[in-house]
Length: 301
Image (cartoon, rainbow, N blue to C red):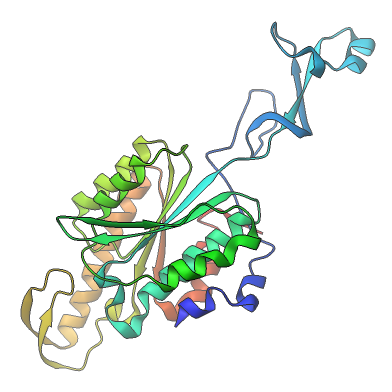
């Protein structure tokens, strides 16, 4: 199971040299170089700009004034203060089929991103969502910044159970009820909800000025639709609805088609709204997923 690997020292060592880039904090000023952190009071000199009335005189560059009789102000690079929330779908569908280990894949990708971000002392928390139509199940850890605190996530993750409905919109509403600065939100889910639900949830996050990233989890068997041919009685693990189905080559092809259509619609919505969309199809493909999708999610070496 991939959850065990999420806290394995050998796995984490592979992540040590990686950094999570921050688009939201990027500042561009005419005639100045682009920086990937927030500008403000800090310790590291960053740039110069022309003096304006009201600027702190302590930051005047007297050497420039002596040579050019020009009033310029030295600016400094502030420590970036980014809040990263990683939302893990713990609805019942994330545990089905059991052999696909969809939830394990979600956890290892989410905790890997947390570990990478904590290397820059970003504020990171994990959250779990699911529930029923009547009540959302929203659980969250405290925020941690240093990698020394990373293993505090282990107890939280080990206590999670996949049950109930997805309830993504309700989970986002719970998230936004807590007062936090706009930051980065990574939603990791199989997104087996109506498009109206995930579109509403993601739009809420954008409206609150969060930078949003989506990791779409799909299981190996779920994608291929490969089941021994025959008649099945299938129960929806979230609603309890029973259906009689007959599986064969045609039904397997139909499963793949519907997954692709579902993925394409979600990806198209994300593209139109400036959301990063990442495909994580198959726990057996973990290494390939990380090589291909982590750069897309902003992870740089």
